[in-house]
Amino acid sequence: MKSNIHYSALVIVILLAFSFAGMAQTNFVTENSKTKKQATMKMYVIEREIPDLGKFTHEQLKSASQTSCGVLKSMGPKIEWVHSYVTGNKMYCIYRAESVELIKEHAQKGGFPANSIVEVSDIISPATATAN
Image 1 (spheres, rainbow, N blue to C red):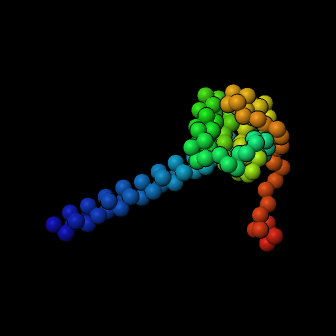
Image 2 (tube, one colour):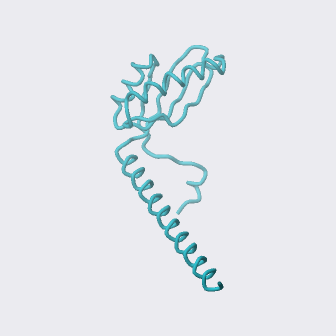
Image 3 (cartoon, one colour):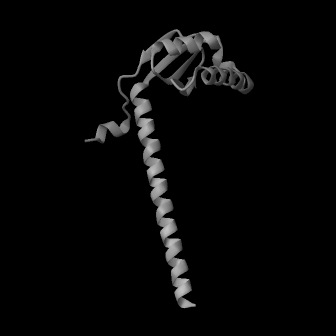
């Protein structure tokens, strides 16, 4: 009886070990794929001039977001929306894309202005001040 319990415990430990190893491998593949994808995609800041944008309701912003997401889905994985900042008369959007042309195509298909499109050359934060 004791040997059956020890054998069962050993089997469970082995299965758990394989599960964790599989999860780690899957995580590595996922991270590796992200790295490859991000290597081909550049980050951009898009400035959109939209009068009275800061007065838009939650529903209006939601509708614009849904339109943008629908266009992005139809365009495929070579462009993605990270997030946007809404201000009084402008929106600043952060996108990853393989080219400026894809950003322009998204704006045209969605009916959004893209008054300025600038590639991000680097990112800094307060942590940059203390980094080695």
